[in-house]
Length: 251
Image (cartoon, rainbow, N blue to C red; front, side, top):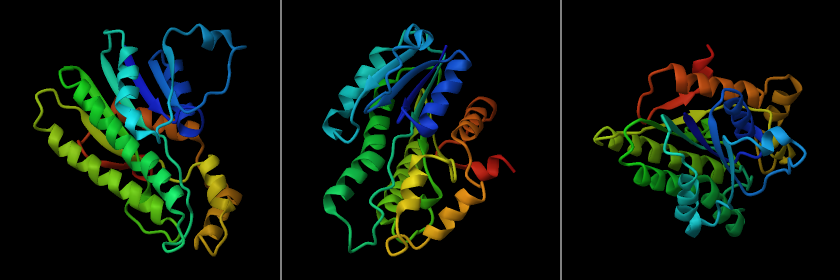
């Protein structure tokens, strides 16, 4: 049985991944701060392969406990483990020198500390697991390129990218190594894009470009991106620590 742990699973890419995994018969452990009630959906309600874990990932002191809760739902028949660090935010969209420290701290917790601590705990708890295990940190082109107004977002993604590369190198020395990779989904039609388009040009110099993405239909759907990621995980030999860009996977 393939088991997928997906954070930020209530919407966007996380929700699309969960839906496709369940359709393929995989077990899903979904992590989010809130979930839309589906009490009228008996198929979902009675699905033994679906587990919800409610957690606020900005509460970083509790993250080891969150991972222990996740692992407690394993059935000990997992052939392959996939941990998708997907939860994130783009705010604050402000120039450096105008950032709100409290919002910046919240951003750093969700975008960097949470995936870093969760991955560390996952690798620690599954150290003796001999079958295939993969950690995917959802990244962005912003990890490698500066965008005015995205000081918080670019730096958090860059930090997670280097953390991923270090973990990938370290895993090569492990007796039961995990694959640790980054995946950049590119521009995607999600709520995050709405937040980006709502920013004014004073705060975000590339605002007009992102409006064009929407108007010209350039944004990819979460379903399309989820399918590409699953193809990568199941059909290709992974390189530990590598940054996978969707643009290179679909050309």
